[in-house]
Length: 85
Image: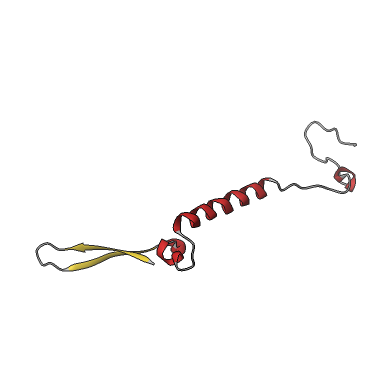
């Protein structure tokens, strides 16, 4: 799917192609109607999927099975911590 922008010279009536723009994802409604999914239902489904993805991303957590501070190295170079020597 694409949209073509043209310029028409009024004097010569010549037509010049100015720019060709693709339509991302080809979400033209008539392409989906052949699958039995009306355009409004397709849009509803896409919004539902986007919301679900956003919820799932927000639920990601990181947990550790051990005390990460005991793994060595401590807090070297941290502000406010006195060095041992």
